[in-house]
Length: 331
Image: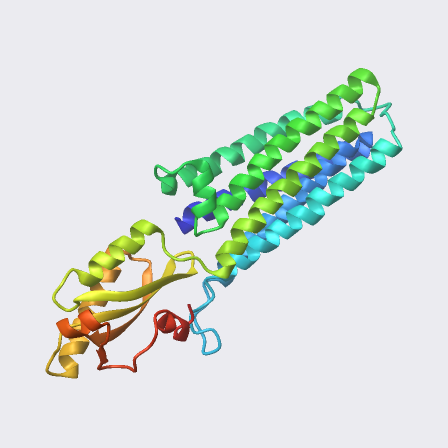
């Protein structure tokens, strides 16, 4: 994902939500409608979430330290996960509580009845502009993927988070407009409570989706199949490597991929020659997949007889079982 594109979408959403939150709070104070309060809290939660994403992006740029030798790239995932928690608790659960309260104690506004309708219509326009910015920036990196696949497979969390937040905000505004309009038409404020409940359910669902996808990134995801194929081709596309014994990949951050592999190499006369070969393989990997910035290669010498019997002699490092290389290097 383009970092500039993600930042542009976040800032657009942040500015829109701050303005919308202020107008919604004013409308709530004038009318007392619960859907306006729920939407106000929703916009405040969204604005806070965008601030969290910006903070996570800034902190993720810190240089690696001895305590964190692979850097802080995953901090963007942590803040995205916090966003899901905020959306669930502050947005969703609060809206559901407010809906229950208003359903149990219905109140019909007797003044300023036109205010929430105007506010909601203006908010829909502003939110649509923010949503359009997120769509445009996402299309720059989405390729031919479906939107569902893009949200599920994106390694950079910012655009999927903003997309889902903006979509949820638009739907929430429509639910609020429905509830407010029916309340004003029927003088029955339980329509307002119903709209508020729909907003709450919507936010809880979106928060759960975000939490599931971000949890996968926090646990550690490997490269996509096409990148794995490109790396394998780069490794074996030269005389330095006879075969790949096993290989693992792991995203250390949205734009940083670690590759750990045990490779079978032909016999050579010196360690210097072996090192040159390893360096050449690493250069091919980085050319094929630029995100592969951290590479560990463990060489083994394989003879034809060794391949038939499944044995090998290690020259550079002790023999290890499949999976052990990545374990030593943090996979």
